[in-house]
Image (tube, rainbow, N blue to C red; front, side):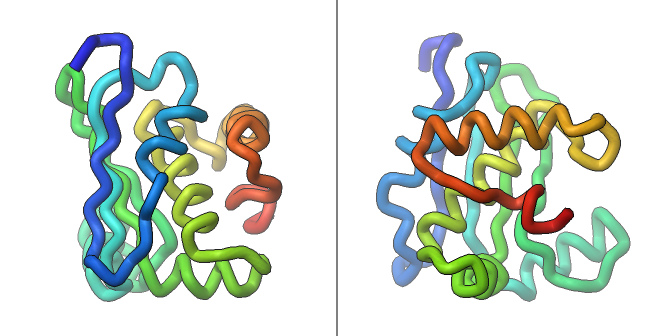
Length: 144
């Protein structure tokens, strides 16, 4: 892979439709997103275990990001399939749209952004990138 590209691998059960997710994420990613990353869509209980182990929260959350710290490898984004489907229903869009919203949010965390203490910087960037990709509301707006 060329050093100036982002390569996204999507891992999900066969029943989970992820068509176009990797290409969409690559097309909207900020210019500094270079290297490889994985987006895994997994059962809620798996995310709950990861959340408990790494964040000491015993509940499923929608998305977790795990930066690799290795040159050329951004890390992994893990999405809870059931949580994503519920959020999609509540927001009035498809699960595939929700996967895009969550994957983008996770990518920004891999790049070092943190919406909990950055005075809106991540939210503004995420909004701009979503708009570039044809999406409206995102995760940060819904949780605030």
